Image (cartoon, rainbow, N blue to C red; front, side, top):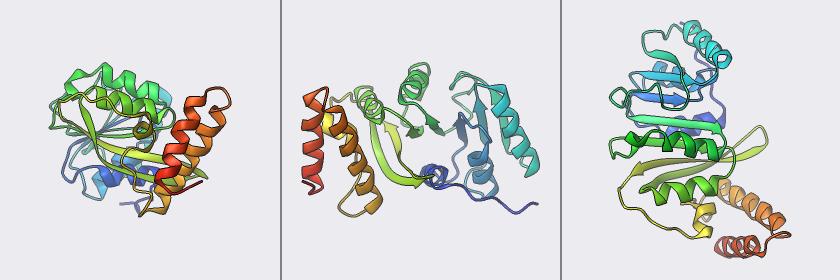
Length: 221
């Protein structure tokens, strides 16, 4: 067997949140690096690598074949979770796409509203909208981390369904359960959020108020 490749920090954090022994669906898999890595290191027994586009999925197939993982990783051409059976997976990773797209994918698959599943989400944009959506639908963030990859900061959330819809504050939609007091990457991510909010505040004062609340929390002035 070829020597196993390394994941970048973004995919590595997603993989860290995947539960041991849980069959996995990786939505928007592209090169299928995450599912191949997790099955070959023995963290998950089986994975579906799914993508809506045939070209990236072909790259995924090539990764699966290169590392002789055909018996444990199945590639699937489908949009979102439309080609995934609720009975074949327990953990679902949706990473590397916009927040609105993640919301659309979850809306189209109501079966994920079940405590048996864990969602590992890494929105590239509009994280606050994803967080508000999740809580309004009855989900909760169980774990959240931050990482830096290619000079950019990202957050990853492990989410489960609790069945109790909840309205959350604007501040919480940006901070989630990150812990800037104890983790420098969490702090750096929130500092970046504050900077972005203050730029938006030039057109809407509400963003300045959100930024101020977050800055107060992490002792920034």
